[in-house]
Length: 156
Image 1 (cartoon, one colour):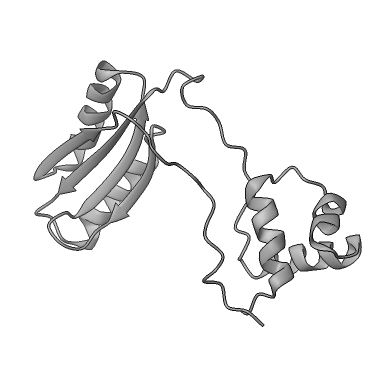
Image 2 (image 1 turned 180 degrees about the horizontal axis):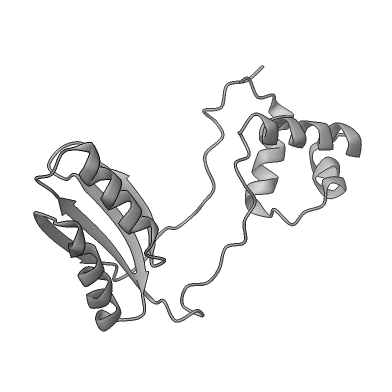
């Protein structure tokens, strides 16, 4: 899908603040309210805008510890992958699960209250019959964003 300069501007503003009204976005990108609404609606229908969410502060919600969990398995079959997928979907503390190339099979991102919270998460994970689990804990976050760069979006 080709995105115009104004489409990319709309997306940039919505990534910064999804609570902006259509009128506020339209004003910032130089469109009428109805033209802006049509563009937003089209990008939602096309799946460019996947969802609109509220980002929460994990510190204020007693989830100060972020952990990246590297997983290797010796079970490379559809049955195991299905069971593993169901298991991780059921653990609320796991925010992301990625199947990887290279030495790792899966990389997970999770948030927990503390080390005992991580231990509880670990005990849930190992129910999946894993070969190797290695965890790294975030000591400092130097950059964190949900904004995708739009300079690579195809222009009209």
